[in-house]
Image 1 (cartoon, helix red, strand yellow):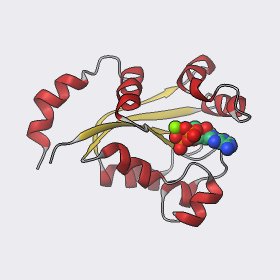
Image 2 (cartoon, protein in one colour):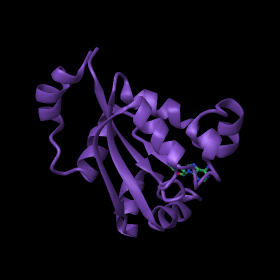
Image 3 (cartoon, rainbow, N blue to C red):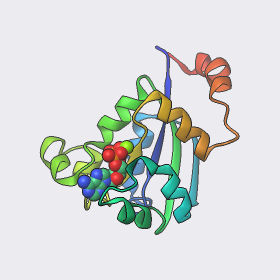
Image 4 (cartoon, rainbow, N blue to C red):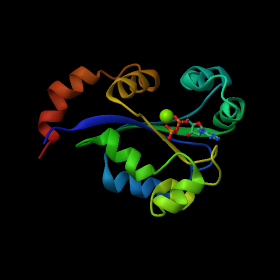
Length: 150
Ligand code: DAT
Ligand code: MG
């Protein structure tokens, strides 16, 4: 089965959470990881699709409030799988419909909801390039993926 790549972020509320890191590394192949501090401008750019929403300012402040971790994850259907493992965006909904998901288990509020995951092939490519500018997706699919799939 062919593997797919996705970008996952561990947000400042969850960056040191051992169970979240364990879930992530048990389920996915970790292709790249870096820990970084985001500037507010980086957050604004990353979340520009939400500019103008009532939570945008809060979201930007929060994402710049402490270290985050960025991962490139590989798995069959990685994009959808990581979104399922994370659970729904909003914590109340997550607790009810997916209590065992990461957000359902560890989410604190709708803003402090532990994790991010790309939502499509196009956004995964864009987000991987934003965090790992030296990483060539095309080269990974051509040279590394064929050796990893099983
Ligand atoms: P997701 O992170 O599940 O892709 P999204 O792209 O709709 O969700 O929103 C990005 C982030 O913005 C989300 O992780 C937390 C914040 N957010 C979204 N909707 C919100 C809301 N109704 N109230 C507070 N924060 C919200
Ligand atoms: Mg989103």
